[in-house]
Image (cartoon, rainbow, N blue to C red):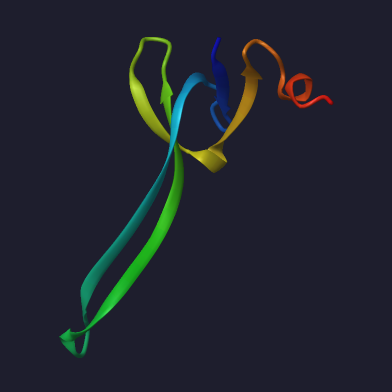
Length: 81
């Protein structure tokens, strides 16, 4: 079976293929000091790899999706102890 996720904004559903963690860091010359004191921007993004019904693969931000079902069961059923 599969894990089905839903994009919160569009309500489109996808099959979850995997997860990832993206980090980035960029430098730009400072307005006054140029490359002697570059301005640095850095951050990270938690993402998931998903599959559209037509088989196309895409990456979505993890905070923009929610889990609908896991192996045909709702998350409440899976975590019910």
